[in-house]
Length: 370
Ligand SMILES: Cc1cc2nc3c(=O)[nH]c(=O)nc-3n(C[C@H](O)[C@H](O)[C@H](O)COP(=O)(O)OP(=O)(O)OC[C@H]3O[C@@H](n4cnc5c(N)ncnc54)[C@H](O)[C@@H]3O)c2cc1C
Image 1 (cartoon, rainbow, N blue to C red):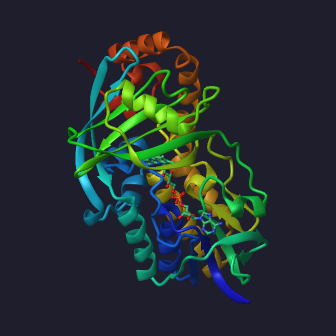
Image 2 (cartoon, rainbow, N blue to C red):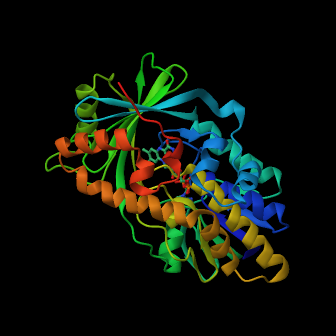
């Protein structure tokens, strides 16, 4: 059986970043993914905040440096820069605030991150599915087995590694569907709220020559499926039809107390490290991946305890993620009815989310009613 210091399962943003930092820290690292083409199919809205916006979300003093090291958006993966977020209430009222970000191609982005890991010396193997994990032994779909002193579970919300290692965070999930609409769209991302998207929201994220449109919901109305919900949502808001649809999940449960089990560390979606308020999880997958890679390499090099990973990610990410989850729960109480939601959004429009919930992120959020 082949032995590695670190075996990373999943070459999404979390796994590739973990592998990059593990290899950079001197660990013999293997990065595995089941996909034939990394980043494909796209199961994402493909929106990223700029590094400056991201730094605003996470106040820990080390975050700016971490972002510089780990949250690098390769320019060739950027399809469009956006400058504003528009939140549309069920009443049709539009609330605008400045938000600098990028629509990226996940197809290109995931490949670039995996190549960056390879560039640091990690061995990248795909398609190579993992069917089970026990005590550092990783069973491969091709019948083989590899062993890692440390295994990093970066295999998304339905993590096989988590099942094998007995890691079971509280799983609350958005059901998501996304597709592509053709047309011309303004330089703003649009989020739509109301009964077409129960417990969640719909979006339009403009790209170079089209837009990523989709929705996430916490439950499906009886007799509906995600496809019919998306059709009704697009029609209701006058958005063009969507093709190339994919369906997937986003974990929106609370961040776990610990993101490790035995020799396994968990990052990104596999660990529930997602902003529950909006289902955005790429930046947190990358930042937790960085922490896991550093801790895993330190463990292999000096025998430092793997608990260092929990210390790192908790100090960097835990509080803002927990706060977002609490806000989501609070919001769930008012999104049940369109009327309450419109009133709630109007209230927030006047007072600002910051004063209401002492949420750091919207400190810069100046709602403009139009
Ligand atoms: C419809 C939708 C829209 C979204 N929009 C946004 C957005 O606009 N911005 C944002 O920040 N976030 C968004 N998210 C969330 C974001 O996509 C995830 O949080 C992010 O991809 C998590 O990264 P990750 O590396 O943890 O996992 P993933 O990106 O899911 O990567 C997991 C990898 O593991 C591999 N894998 C899984 N199982 C196995 C196995 N058994 N063996 C081997 N490999 C395996 C997969 O092939 C995959 O490559 C969206 C999610 C969805 C579903």
